[in-house]
Length: 113
Length: 113
Image (cartoon, rainbow over all chains, first blue to last red; front, side, top):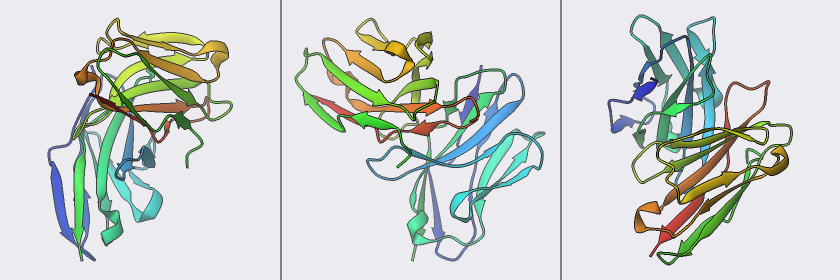
């Protein structure tokens, strides 16, 4: 069975500092991994994905994520946080042989000016 | 705006009433998903369509829930005899054959009073 864990309910960071939002996953085969962001009362907006190849993937708004197969992790990162990055972030996984994408519980990112 | 349209955006209903939500996918997206999201949680998978065929239905989807996708275009999600526990955000997501990621609509927020 697939599962995703986001160990932090909330991450607080000062504007201009680097940020990391953690994610670990479990899947029977090879994973497709995703990060989505959600603003209040809105749907989920796709940020980036890992399919295959380079372990460091770059996405929208300066975000990037690093795939680590041995640690089954896919942490989201950004070198310099903005106040406007404050939102709810979801990590998600899908088995490459499947169709169902499973989401973590989410991490609220709060960037203080 | 991802191009996935959900209506209505908000629905308030009395307990015991039936409600129906609609999702219009990005054209040419043959895969369609319904998710439910409660406050502080990540989206939970409800059901999946490939074209007009409903290929999987979560155990979360009781007999009061039914979803259809006639002709493989728009989809509807109906909840009969609503209960207060049905109050949630209902999200639709679609994906084409050339996409690995899903695109989400804005969601329909259901409040059962």
